[in-house]
Image (cartoon, rainbow, N blue to C red; front, side, top):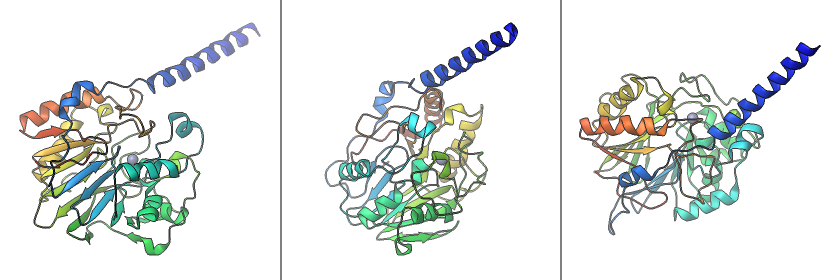
Length: 330
Ligand SMILES: [Zn+2]
């Protein structure tokens, strides 16, 4: 009996230590300060094409006539809520995000894949802006569960192109980075309309896209929302700028970051790379963005290696400012 008691106490202590470890690591975030020099300046007056960033992989491409958005994620529920209970879009956060982006009108909203940090708020964004929501069946099931009418959504498949004003979007089949939310092979789909509130893991990955965003007669941009790749998938495509998602990239094995760079940045011949999906999305947009915590990522490892790779390839590595329109360049 004594031994049994001792084992029980030991297990309880181990469990408490485990919980404490997770709690501490989820709050330990590297400072962004050392990389402040990489943040792009506000667009000079008269810039025709601008991009705005609202955290994770929410980007607005705007030529003054037509605006298109990736993701449209603003709710950013806290860590405890995501880990322990159910989540749902936060309408106030969505309204505040759209106001901060000063969006007059939006033609399209396109989640880069079906996970909650990309797709959860998109139906609400579509309803509030009149944008058409584009996605695969998983993303459309998120829209259906949120009550968006079929007329406000359009199903897309790998290889499709869609045109909005002077913008053409090409949907290229991509791959998610291996993370606790994804095996990096893309076998998880939302098969039924998903009605929130639901567990964070109920927003399944679906198809992960590499989105080629081209402006008529102008530059091309590649949005690689997740730090995964399909070998050879981008060969022959051209983009001036890559918006590269680096979430959990710091936790990948040696050699992975260099391979990702070759398969994505070098493959399209980009001269500039703007890093996205580096911020801790369990913190609200009413405070300055902070890198992902040590529990989920190793931001410093990512930065150290990517700065070296970009310098060797003479590519311009940048971070986007929050909400402020910038000239995507280069
Ligand atoms: Zn994801």
